[in-house]
Amino acid sequence: MAGRSGASVLDEIDGLAAQCPPGMQVQPLCQIDARGRRCAVLSFSAGPSDPALPAFGVFGGVHGLERIGVEVVLAFLRAVLARWAWDVSLHDLLGRVRLVVVPLVNPGGLLHGTRANPAGVDLMRNAPVDCRHGAPWGVGGQRMSARLPWYRGPAGAAMQPEAQALCGVVERELIGRPLAISIDCHSGFGLDDRLWFPHAHTPAPIEHLPELHALSQVLDGALPHHRYRFEPQSLQYLAHGDLWDHLYLRAQQQPGTTLLPLTLEMGSWLWVKKNPRQAFSRHGIFNPLIAHRQQRVLRRHLALLDHLMRAAASQHRWRPQPLLRETAREAALRHWYGARR
Image 1: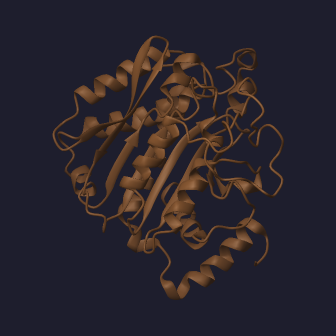
Image 2: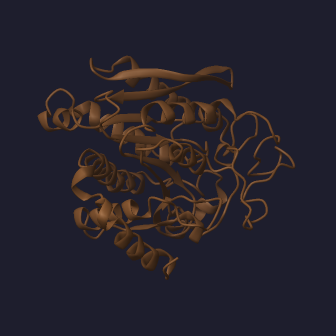
């Protein structure tokens, strides 16, 4: 696992697609050419297509350098496939929730060993959402050059194919349902594992703050002693072009739908702290390079993903009722923003 090539990751995804059992659908979302290889961005889905039921989406590999995110999503997908033949409870769960998994959004970046896609565009800065509240120069997204990090792409241009593929599957599979939870697996910020939610383009709290606060409380109860910091991304920094801000705003245009997008930002600085030699490796800044450390990371986050899928399926048991939403909002504002707004 630790340190394996991008080509071997792509081979595994293709192998899983070829061996999918009846009842799980595999769909190519787009095709990307990189390193002389034609790569498909694949989605794996199972469960009811009925839009009246909730959904859970898992995504990885938006940034090619952050391989541990792909490994976490693949570990989750392998676990689902391994349980498929014998686990009655899994099939009961998938009778109540739609599951969508996209292990690798940016195969070209993975093969090239870059954060950006082969066109030099940072997919998480590529959406048509501008920050007007002081995004930090550079890291918040820039349009000067693809030779510099965090390039958003040309102003007014269509989103990159990989970004369009991600948005398309979310709009088809998640948006339009009474509740959908998504989690996008990344690494590279701080010493702690964080669960971020929108907004990234503005410090203003999102409409579904009561639901997110309730979900964080469910997480605290179901995963005691967890190490996640559940918080708005805007508390850390603002950015242009965030795909999940864009998708959340799109979901807001459809009455009766609730999309709760989460980003798992694994604290890779801790891995560097424990093994300082990783600081001299481009991959080491974003990924655990020692095998036993990577195995520990995968075990920890598998429990989180399973919990979130169950929370989506049981959303009617924990989400605030209409008469209690304002009280829940006030509690969330005090918890995350320190005051009522």
